[in-house]
Image (cartoon, rainbow, N blue to C red; front, side):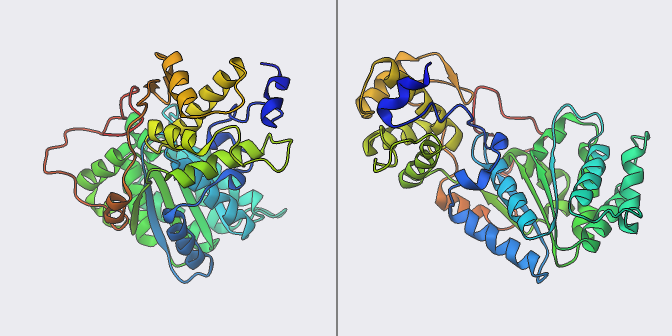
Length: 356
């Protein structure tokens, strides 16, 4: 659609073309703080000052902002001259640990730990692992090597994104045992943080209780409030804004934002995807304002289109954890419901943005 179509809204173009936090060049510009972020900031400060060590799990459904929290931590860590090892766990990795070791090498080099005369001694075991062709490894020995590297380079952050993807790997158990060893051996000045679905954390609690009990904080992300949703929207619109002195969320009025956030049940990614659908509808109909009526008609008009893994309706999405539920989940992981968990955890079904 021509960029001129958006000029009536004081925009140079559609600001929702890049919806995923993972692809944002500067995630801190678009990030909106919630209560969980203040807790994470306090934890990181203690790590930077080498006053404490921490193992943190960030849980939530797809689109809740798990990756965003890790990216914010990575960006801040680099600003504070810490060693930051950010690693995406995907289902396509034939050997997760070797890829992690290679990422560790690259991160150490970028942080200035690798000099012209060679790598420091603490990095050599991981460098050897990155070159290894043997997919079998000793979790205890490998975990100690990772911990030694993190301790030697402190302050340091090991950030593991989408750890639930390990369920597709033959390493699901050995990697968890390796992380258990890491969490045993790290010292003040080290943060190990990972994101995952709640179902994977429940699986860890049952199948690897020793590792689960070493998690200091398990933080469930909560739904956006309407005011937080307005701020998220305002930041996205600002990137394309060419006219000053407008309401920050124009052309969306306050009631429309509430309607959209309700339809998304507070899921940030689904909220922005619905904002995109409604903006395109507004442009097509030459509307000068987006109100609740236009929101409802836009979602009805696009009935059957999949957004965030959900068919678009006036009741898209499923709710994130409520703040009252998150408070209980913000300490060590609770035991799962009294039911038998057989085998390995499965990813949430593609038709739902929320984990089981």
